[in-house]
Amino acid sequence: MFYRLKDTRTDMKLTYYGHSCFSMEIGGKHILFDPFITGNPLASEIRVGDIHADFIFVTHGHADHILDCVDIATRTGALVVTNWEIHEWLNKQGVGNTHPMNTGGKWQFPFGMVKAVTAVHSSGLPDGTYGGNPMGFVVKSASGNFYYSGDTALTLDMQLVNSFVPPDFSILPIGDNFTMGFEDAARAAHMLQCRKVIGVHQGTFGLIKIDIDKAKSHFVHQGLELIIPVIGNTIEI
Ligand code: NI
Ligand code: MN
Image (cartoon, rainbow, N blue to C red; front, side, top):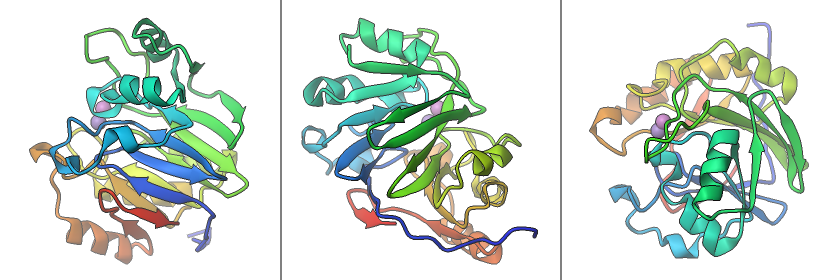
């Protein structure tokens, strides 16, 4: 290995709402990612009406990433950041406070800089509308940096992420079948030069149920750390 995997600590808090839905608290702002709660039987304890959001980021149009977006955005007035096609779709659903991006672009938000990066997946919206291309997000803030890949295959483009923004931790899917499995997520961590991985998009339904102990020990053998967040819990990273 030509790089050192550093142990870093940030001033961010991550609250996990199940599947690929989580909120990052950065400098007092709540940034919610891929809101999907009411359709997740494992997240039945979560009260959607209690979730704070100043910003909502949506990686792609699939229902398991956008189901509760209109509801939460309408209640909170949060700014929704997503690709052009989903931005237009949200406008038609009555959500007007949106910020469109597309792959390769970056923007300075009040909590930090966000760059939209490649994800290899699909993005059709629940009603069949074309949902553009899926994206991942790299976030650079005064409290720390992270990469959330969204649903994606392992892709060599991940090698570029560290040169844009070196992530202190990464949130990656590990459930296999529809996205990377844990072996590819570990390969991704090496490409990202990022030791700490929060594993998501696993366990929600049959096709993405995996052996968590096996995944964790695979990461340990690779010199990496795999954190499996508990639904409803907040962790300081
Ligand atoms: Ni998807
Ligand atoms: Mn998904």
